[in-house]
Length: 138
Image (cartoon, rainbow, N blue to C red; front, side):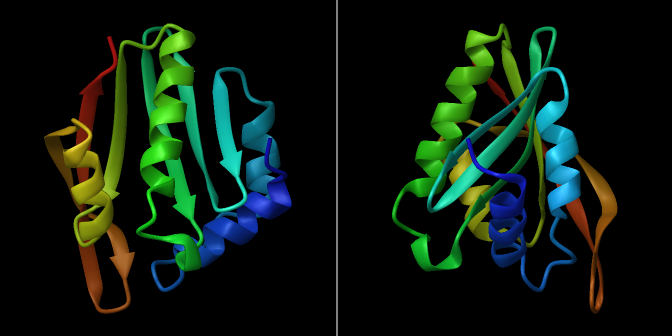
């Protein structure tokens, strides 16, 4: 298990320049909630919430110095397996339209776009859409 402080540090590094990272207190609160699963490693972590037969990937973060080495794919696979073990048949997520690396990863492992939230994420020069995606875990 990753500590709330370590999760906040990694999250801040992973999402630098894309808005504020989540705070340690926010992670501490999430970690106590029913159905929340966190898979962590030194390089990063993945956080999901399972409710009934659905899971939502809340966030996945990998230290920028450890990117493009398969860590996100491995974390995603582990958190999907953990969600399936808790009864989830589908995993949902949202990703910023301008996050090409994440969108590429999700598509490569079987996520399909199901919709968009127009102008959901604020960026310095404007707003970008959230791309909604889903994967069958069964």
